[in-house]
Length: 457
Image (cartoon, rainbow, N blue to C red; front, top):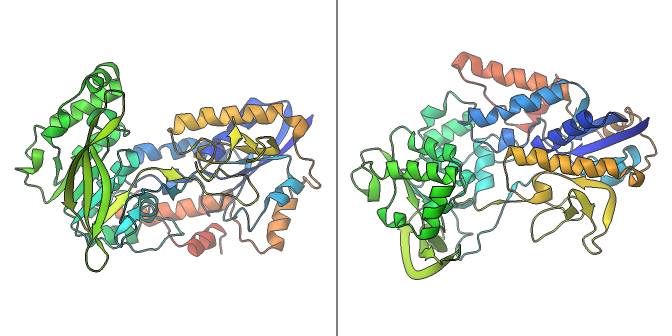
């Protein structure tokens, strides 16, 4: 029977699904899979990229947990690819590797002033409120008026967390330091800016509806944004999701806060459509003072054009949520322009020659860019796995593929790795921390503490 020792780098949904698909789909192979993750805990952006008040989306963890708890995939957490283990190491001990490292950096918003003090990327803020171990513990929320640039789900997540009263997050797994930071927030107004109209937004109806359910927050929309062109009307008529989004927004237009008038809540969340950011202005200290945007309009060809009309909204902080971007990996080809590993259907390609790199594969956002939901991740992984199976003639020929070789290698380098039993210890510890307070869990944030608990030290 053909033996396949596979390394998968990245223990988020993409890496776990790829491992599961291979184990389920191919019984003619004797398959063993080792999953490497640079964080001490698995699940990637499901744990560190989804807002704590999204328990329905976090239900994905249940499916991922079932895969890992079968016990046929080994996990090596707290292991950094490129330092703790390298591509040369993998070639010595495996037949192939799949990179599933995702996209965790912020895409750029190239406008004047975007680097001013008080300007932030969405990824950094999301990592903070999700208790990521590698970001600072504190986040200053001393601005009363805040801008969020983007019309996707991440933009709505950020807007909701900024507008929501901290006490309403207590039943969730929000970390203690995050709760304290949000409780001290001075934010009263959150302004969300999108270049296109209400019928072209990228967020889902569920995300949008949740905004309108926030306690003591007025939803502010503007009548001028709802003068629909033929393309928008056609999208509403033909697309169920767009129709639901329009229905939600139209309901908000009947509320007291419409056009910034008549609301009684202590906080407001403004949605500005047809608004293309052009400049962030600053005060004498170089801090964010206002966002200048240009009104846009449809161009009758599915795009937008500027109208030349400039407007200015006073703000003291701005968050850009215009997409995520992948990070290069040592020794692995990387497309700097698109933030992905160059590939053909998951088969990694040399950047210069466009020829295949034997034994090296990619799946998830590092393969296709930060688009699509969990369902796309599964089909994406199936495509990559099919090529891996068909390519067995070009797999690596490892010097030592014994299961004991990797723990010995990591131990020799002093790497304090965590395993599946360690994740169970950390998981139960966090749940126990939350139980006395009737909270889902309280996340352990410091990396060294996560490792210590996981390793039972």
